[in-house]
Structures are given as C-alpha cells and as structure tokens.
Length: 420
Image (cartoon, rainbow, N blue to C red; front, side):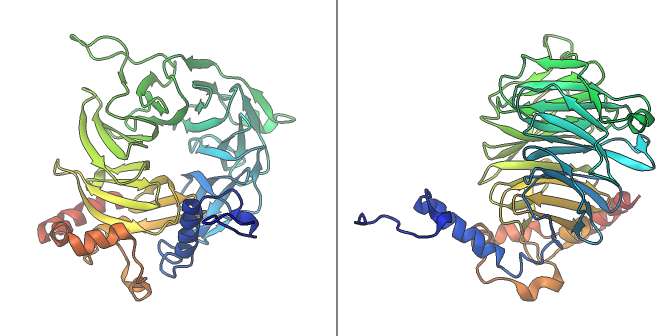
C-alpha cells in the first residue's frame, strides 16, 4: 500500500531520490533542452563530465573526464579525439608540460585520477603512456607543471603535495621500452590538514607554488625545493600562509597575478589577496559556492564560475568590485576557467567546454546577461530567477554596468594588449 504523500515511481533513476533532488534533476533537464543554452558559447560536447581542462596551443585542449579518461579536443572543429589516456577512476586533473619538452614533435600532457596515479602521454597520441608517477595514497585532486623546468606538482586527498622531477630530456621517455616509473623527489605534508584542491604557480617567475584545500587555508612553497616560503620581515614571522577564517570552508581554486592571489571557495566568495601583506583586498560575494576563478588583469576583470553553472565577470580595476556581465550557459557546476589571448574558455559538469570572446562580452550593451546578437532570437522566456532579479528589479545596477565611451576606448586599448 502506498504511503500518503510519498513519491511513487517506476523509473529506476528516481529510486532513492528525494522530492527536492527530483525537482533539481527535472530543472536541469529542462535547461539542457533550452535552445539558447544549446548554442551559447559554441559548446564542445565531451560525452562525459569535464572535471578540469588545460589549453595546449591555439586550437587544442586537454580534458579531464569523469569517464576514467583524458582526451584531447580540437577547439576549432569542436570535437574530442577518439583516443584517450585511460585510468581506473575519474580523471580529476590535467596539465601540459612546457613547449620545449616534447616527444616526436608533440607536446606532453599529464592526467591524474582517483586511481592515485599520474600518467604522462603525448598530446598527439593520448593512448601512449610514456611514464607513470606513483606515490599518493589517495585520490589525486590537482596538478601543475612548471613552464620551463621538467618539474610537476600534484595535490591529493591524502593531504600531501608531491614534487616530481622528470628526465632532463624528453628523449628518455621515448627511448624507454615501456612506461617509465617515476617516484616523487619531495613530499610536502603536515601543514595542510585537509585535502589539496588546487595548485598554481606565480606567473612572473614560476618560483612560488601556491596550494589550497578543504582546510580553507592557503600556503606557499618554493617551486624547486618544496620548502615553505618565509613571511616578510619585521614583526611578522613564520611561513607565508593565509589561515582559515576569511574563507570558512573548502577553497576549490586559486590563480595568481603579479601582486594578487585569487581564491574561490564553497563559502560563496572569491577573494583577491595582496600577496605581500596577505590582506583580503577584494571579496566577491556570490549566491552559490564559487568553484572556479580566473583573473584577466589585462582588462581589469576577474571571472568566476559557480555551482549553479553561472559565470560572472567582475570589474575590479576601480577598486570596488562590480558585476558587469553574467553568462547563463552551463546547466551544471562550472569546474574550470582558462583564457588565451582575448578568448575565455569555460567547462562544467554538464560535459561542455564553451568559448567566449572577452571583447564581445565586455562590450555587450544589452544588459547584464550576455547573449550575442546572433542568438538573441533564441532567448528563452524562462530566464534564471537570479537573472530576472537583476534585469527587472535592479535597473540601476544594469545601467551602471554599461560601458561609457571613455571605458569603451580604454577597453579597445586593453584588448590590443590581449592580441599581442
């Protein structure tokens, strides 16, 4: 006998799901059928959830997929390769080695997985494993590769950061009779008390490695030795770190510029930290967990991605952060943001990788919600609730977000820097 008020269903997918979960699933499926979202950002469909990605040259990306594979993607043809680097669990992170470290003319990529392993493989031949890096005792969560040295960094659910030194010449990888077995040369453990979620190098010299994780702290390490970076002189002593407090919970992402370190957290904020003083210079408040952050200093903006799939573009050059554009295209969590020149790329758990022309996004004069002119006839009458609130209940904010003539001139000048 059915219980009054209970959900009764014969669909297997509905088993063990609450009413709220079913409602969220139905909403997501409706969004996936929205003709506008099917076109926005010229989506490349990977066929699996994209957990992370890295760019490799002008028209290639390397994708970390939930289907236990890492693949390359042709960004011009909007297609994924059939060949794949295969793991025994979801692939959580990828990285690409420097342009001068190649095998047979091909760049080299790395993929990390829940299977605790990191694999090296040619971008032109993902199915060929050149080396296997083993040393973590739990899921590998993140990767970073030094741009000029054969050094790789990994962070794990085992609370450690491992440093790996590859052969000085990539020829040694090609000449090996089988996948080369590589052990870490440095283990960093004890300072972070939770899982390591993200790693990034300082862009100026790649001499400092920053790490963040589930303990909500941020720490800094010498990129070649793994030693903790010392704090500035004076009364401040000890190692450089940002303690839990400003961020209340998991920090999912970090990206550095010359003077600022940006972090994204499950506490619904992205924060810009002064690297010298470790002060929180800017706090970007969101309505959902912030899962990705990307500063684009050339044009004075920071881009954030959140758990509900939205992307926000913040103007930060004036000192007071302000949302100047929103993009509602992904139907699930945004997992990664990257940029090359004037093109912004975003990926998400909806299995799509999308591209956005930064100049078009910033120069758009149709309000907060970015919809390129060629797609405006497809605009759905069922807009996200948050978008409607901005457009209907906050016209002043929308007017403030429009670029003035002076700002448009400045933008044109800044965009010329991106094209260089």
